[in-house]
Image 1 (cartoon, rainbow, N blue to C red):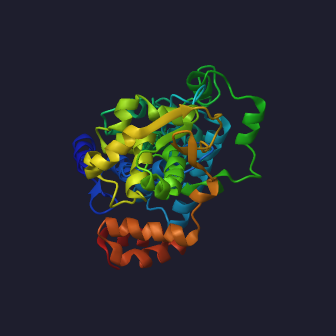
Image 2 (image 1 turned 120 degrees about the vertical axis):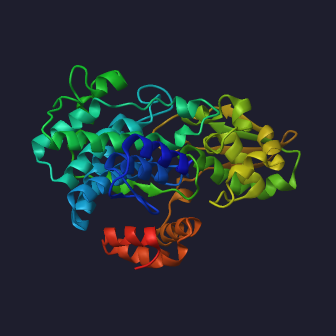
Image 3 (image 1 turned 60 degrees about the vertical axis):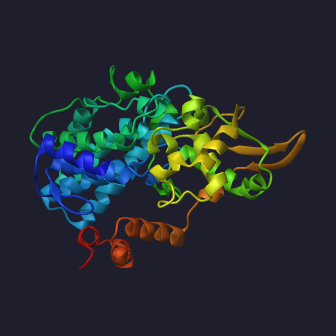
Length: 404
């Protein structure tokens, strides 16, 4: 998938001097798209649970491409990423997405990512306040993000949807720098983002949230323990908890309770039980539950295309029954997995959000695993140290070439 994305973007935007993660260079627009796609393709990126979005996937590639253009310092890169990611998180929290209603039909990473990427790229380019406002307006003129790539089946394009926002935001910032003036009312105008995409202007309390700087929403961003859709994580957790009992009772009935948000990852049930693509599998609660019950922890080297043909996993997925009985709310669905033998309950596993929280050591471990998977594991500890010291460019260079 990564090679296809690179080929398409080189055809569209040509060569250039902006660095690509893992090696090579491309034109700025292509670099923003490719690097975003590379971050998201494995479904192993960052997550803001309340906003249901992945800020780093969008803002980091846009900022890095702009930084290469402008020669921005590490400090400028850090500030640009932090401020634009905070904007994105605030927009997500203000929307408070659920499985139904406003926001449920959109990839919010993409919808809100355009403005965030425009701000991040604009800061890296050194835009002034009026130019940043124009960049937001110009980014709004490109906004897209319908969720059919996730709701539908048979496609692998869900893996790259954030990349459109990263690329679009960078384009908006470059146009603003060149003097193009975008609409200042892009978010709250008569035909602005909130009314058009979410059906109504933000209520006063939600508007206040966007300008409340007493709370840093970006601090709530977490890293994923497993490479799959975040909404599947609670079901992986309860399946791992129930695995031993399930394997000891091969005829047990497996019932999984979901809410409206998680139910989206269960329909159509036949296709979700037997996914055609790895992206479908990672977006499927029946499949991911079955995978965890059969094979345990779905790590990077275990959850691959071969899993789609694993008859033990597919047979287990056929046994997973879905009950849409849980209340919906922003953030994690509160998964419940029940094993039954006749009229007897063998086990009930209830999701605990703390299970998904990764501490600093676990996060570093994930980082090292990712670099090992990419074939540059030998430099992982050194790269991590440089990142913790704020040496962004040096760290990225070592990821690319694997040495000093």
